Amino acid sequence: MRAMCKLACEFVPLENGGVLLGWRAGKDRVVIDLRGPGPHALHGRHCFVPDHAWQVAEIRRAFQDSAGDVDYLGDWHSHPGGAAAMSDLDSATLRRIARRVKEPLMLIVAGSEINQDWSACCWKGRIDGRFLRRRLEAQPQELKLFDPPHDWATVRHAV
Image (cartoon, rainbow, N blue to C red; front, side, top):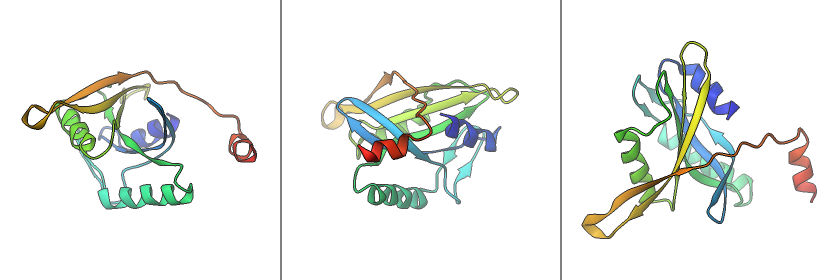
């Protein structure tokens, strides 16, 4: 959460974003890392276009470096000065992702441009229906923040 908010602050009042990395545990998603927008991303007041090629390379690298444990879970982006709610464009993006990735996440951080007090909301997308009646079902997700101990990475690998 801190990393997302820090990246979001770098572009205020413009949107910023990236990808969420981690693993699936049944119906839960465990986000353990993220990536930012990439060097060729475009940032606007009400939209954000990531550097897709750079992000795909980062996802592949994380997957390979973790021996297949870490994978793409979805996207995140900021709404500076706005609400942590999905816009029509966000819903269309989640629908496009859900056509290729099973139940992807869309996490939005929103904050005040003045005090940078950021909040977050997350949805899991799923395509429902058949053929021409296919629609996006976006289910709100409970966010549980975990602040791991400083030596967590070494303890985890030692087990």
